[in-house]
Length: 286
Picture 1 (cartoon, helix red, strand yellow):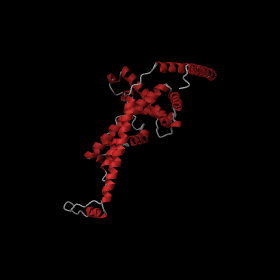
Picture 2 (cartoon, rainbow, N blue to C red):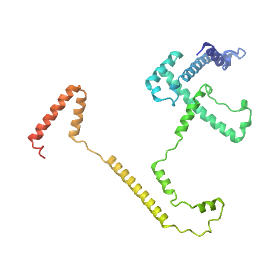
Picture 3 (cartoon, rainbow, N blue to C red):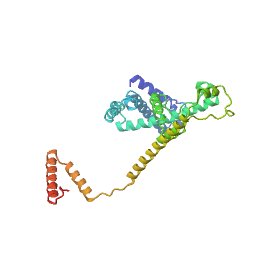
Picture 4 (cartoon, helix red, strand yellow):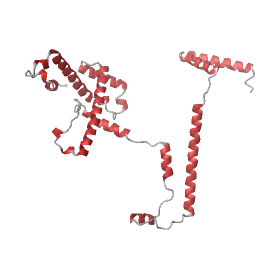
């Protein structure tokens, strides 16, 4: 951040706090404690504005549209360290935590402001002058408005509704099997009264097609139900571990600590010992 911009920010923050510059205010309203608290607010606001500016210059810290390999955990850690070095008053961990807080405040203020705008539009208040309309209460609203593109992108992605299998099957079952003829479409387009029209006789081909489609859907639904039932049964089946399973787990845990060469020797010894025992007991002939 340039020195000129920082000075402008400082002047703007001081201007918002009248007791710091207006000596016409009664002394009671600009006591030492009050002035000290206001200066602390100025410093905090300056640091926050600089933090926002530094984050804006590093899109990998906020833009989900950037490829994942360009915003890995390690790269973002380095970026937060850069931000910390520039701000000076914030550690990298606190800078990240503070940014998350400011971002959440902005998201909430943006959502509330959009609701207010919607209400004003419905009530006809949108025709009022801009300077008299309600404004966002969050002080850094304009500074963090660069997040709008990413927030709208995220809202668009999360608003896509993926139907589940049950809904898809219901929609499939609700689709009419027999298609209307061209004459039916013509009558519908011309608002002809169809209630008094004699029912049409379905052809054997359409009846066979309807029965075939219905049986296929029923068979497919039964297959899905069978798979679901088998999967649930497998999940609900409690398999009691045997002492051999415990021994093998303990053996595997110990062998993972060994080097490859030592592990290979030990595996060979175990297999040879097992083979000798099976041969002695006559188990290899079975």
